Image 1: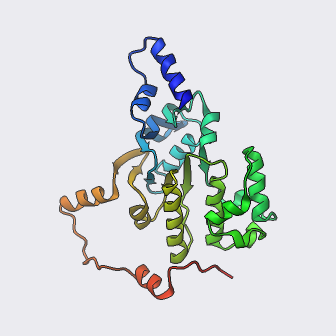
Image 2: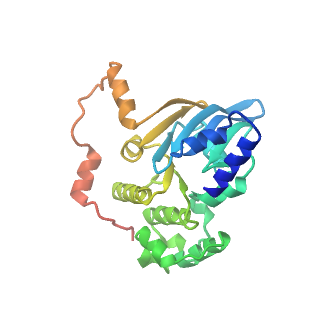
Image 3: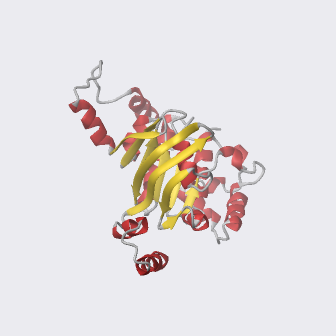
Length: 280
């Protein structure tokens, strides 16, 4: 907050009538602001002038088919990829001027190939803690994702659901204000998926903003406060899931088959139980 206030004062002293950082100051609920973001690879334009805001404390979904530009957009915000043009502000820090400060306030989910398979979970957490220059308590962190009993297990020995839960735990090591989750439930069984949903909701309840990509529309509908649908490098819709569905229904859309009050996944969960059931 002090940094943001100092920046505000420096802008005011220049006599500049308006500046994007002022918009951020007056709307304190906005934690990510993206304006006219573009990314080109030669003649190919992967991201075509995308603009959106993410509100502090929400679960924001970025949806789209493969190749739509959503992953490129997130990698730019995460400081992992250079942009061609546009503006990105994360927690008051401008991507062009303060990428190092942005890295301090975000947590990015690693793919499973990013872990040393021979280290146990406690050792991995301590390793990442050292990289972030943070004092961490591995067992407390593992408690948050229900993995304390696996503290001495090697990463390669975990089940698919356990690996995903541990991956989310590592995004929390630097106590970020924002975490980015890239298709966190891909390949998981229904119980593991729904338990991961509850974990994500709990993380949000503690005040962390969550940005998620997923190909599962039911997942986005359950988790996300708002979603942006991206196609061919552009945002073609941005609203709450309920509002998007209501707008489609209002346009005259009808499913060819009557929608039942439950689906086959509900039957599966009802018969096999909601509790965590790890692979052996």
